[in-house]
Length: 226
Image (cartoon, rainbow, N blue to C red; front, side, top):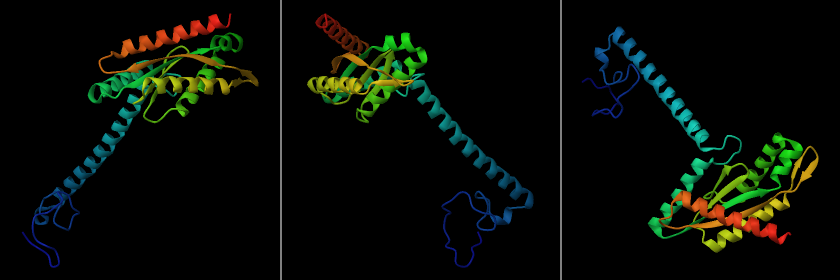
């Protein structure tokens, strides 16, 4: 193969090069007839277009996966994706013996907002609570809407006592930031239940246990209120 002054000999490190150097796509320059050169340049352009289209499709797939995991109304996980996060936390406990925790929250006062102000106000109230929860947990934690006015939080690598303290903190935050709609303030509160995510527990069972603990606490508060 011909060499040029000032250029090192040896195998090429790139399969593709510009015309007039060592050829195009591995074809020696002295074999590049005008027709071959045009064909190769056209092929190179198509390869570039395919690369751009592939990246666009990958981005679209990531967007669709994100949409599939998030609640249709709120900027938090939907129930299916949240259950997956619960399962991940259980797997972490299985492998390393380090339990995480699940908090189950049910809003108080939400039905009154829907009844008095309409469903648009209710949707805004849910967004208000979702934003509060998301802003007050770690990036390693997960927040999801479990249905209606019920939310869940996975606290990674968190022991039960710390999870209970965090649940009480989140409730205080909700109570301290009343929802305001059309100039009217609507107080909100929440009942909570917590469940340790230890090795071997099924995600659905953990959810049911946390839900039961939340409901028991809600009933106790109602009885205490008379």
